[in-house]
Amino acid sequence: MLAWSADPRESSLSTDQSNKKQAWDFFRDLHEALNDAAPPAAEGAEMLRSVVEAARSEPDRGAWRFPEGAYINTLVVPQISDFLRGNGLTEAQARDSLLSESFRAWPKRCSQSPGRAGKYPFDKGLGNSSAKVLERWVADRPGRPLGGQFPDLALKSPSPHTALFEAKLFRKGRLRSAQTALVNDFYQAFFYLGLTRLPATPTHPEWNYDYAVLVAYDVTPDAALMQAWDSFDPAIKRSLWDDANIYPMIYDGTRVC
Image (cartoon, rainbow, N blue to C red):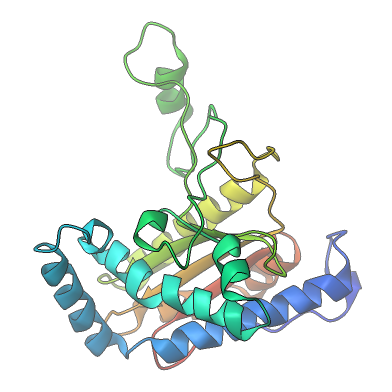
């Protein structure tokens, strides 16, 4: 598991080091809680398949009808809500803190969508070439030139730490595809965190976050995503937190990275 860099000289950030250490401890404890709640890989994969299948016949379970949605709404949203309440927040405060794209399915646990109020001329796709971006920008081309930004989850005040969450279920693929997936996923988290602050509107929360979290459950038979993280250069692992304020919350139900 990645260790906190205690010496502030190891970080290029101006964020208060005491607060950042508290944030690290908060995310580390949440990381452990999510892992404790998740079945081991094979069992988890089968459980989520069953959740998806069952949701197809339930009108109010649309958010559970695809694998990643089943993961987020079965093994992430309830656990984060419970974690917040176990760390000093009331039920109402925990609800106010937790934002989810599936918030309508969680009226007692989530307050609203984490979607950003403003549109943006770029998007989170790492592989988009300048030519592809240009296709959206030119006035006589079909389609929408500006895109909305919708992270999977977010934590806002009164949570003790504010963060955007990208949630991923890694179900198949070997080491190389897992490495590529992590690069793309970390870039998405980085992109979201770098967007400019926007005030709240009647329909959107304030966009003003200190951290981004990649929460990823590895249910592959050979723990490919865990192996991918282990293969990264230690300097990259440190920089994600020290320089980019991104916490890597990767686990497989038996251990955390």
